[in-house]
Image (cartoon, rainbow, N blue to C red):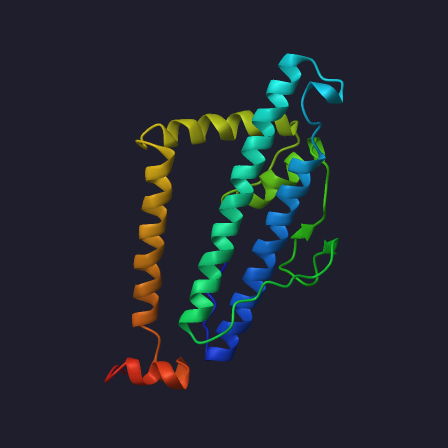
Length: 195
């Protein structure tokens, strides 16, 4: 586990959130690129069964890209809360570490084994190492875990609603504890007598 980073001033927080926004934007683009790299229906030389499987992969990739868009929106909301403008720019692909934390290498990859291993790397829990087994096996293991975990959720819409509710509560809690000195001048008046 990495040590928590202490944010000393508003500009440092602004910079960290801008980097997070760029990272979320780039990851979203990776998922969308993989989605659009898939063949489209049986006209692409696929059998009906293959076209159905590709359609499921396309849907899954699209849903993940939407989740990345939600992450970008959350970061943008936090930036707005501290009086900073949201960031929607990003560096060009590929990004081979350096700009982002070590080990994070971003590239537009067509859907396949290499892309799946990359996504598993990006989405793995902190500290989890990926083995050498094929991405399909790793994905099956991760899918079984997630299927079990989300079976307890009443519906996908309820899960999204709950996530938005939690994000709103977290954002409000964070904003309530931002020292007045880190708030933009207009927000300091709204903060009242907070210290």
